[in-house]
Length: 204
Image (cartoon, rainbow, N blue to C red; front, side, top):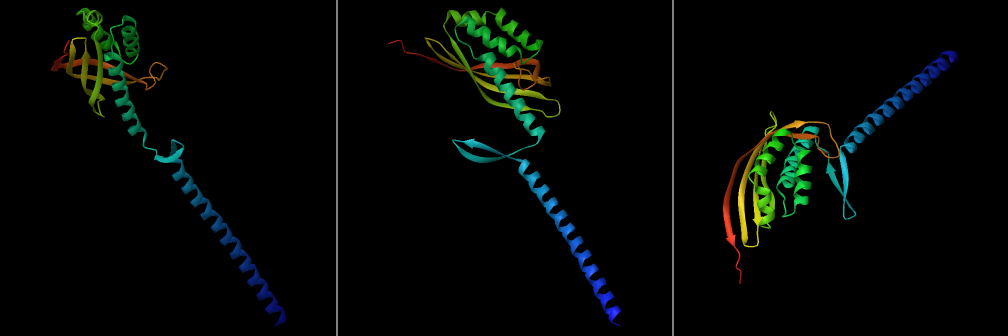
């Protein structure tokens, strides 16, 4: 009887030990799983500094990021192509930088404008041209865009404004220093460029 009681106690002790060991392993596994879940959530958060104050900015998908890059690329191209001063070097510099962002259709548009004497007229009339994007629509399936902007022509005699509408198709290419977005504008075409206002400055 005594021997049987001892065996029962030993058996119970073994089961308790095994149960405790298994429970410990399960707890460790649960902790690891929970930790990994929290780390994944943390990786999806980015903190940016705004005047030394950390602000949480959540990451978005690659596709959403790319659409933002497409919009920025189209905007930057038009800023470079249409920000002009009555300075031949400045015109060549901006046009040259814009050429890295598009293909031969952009070159064709430049040649067409140049042949009409547009740049020479800017210099001779001391006209400064700026452009502001109103909106840009991009088809996610075809990457065709339609850009809407407002041009401002400032001369000594007055200020005029024009509405411009252009289109093109975006193409993914390798990122470079001259093309950091890795996007190329193809099939570029001006659909509309019409005057909306013409204000004359008083000369006295």
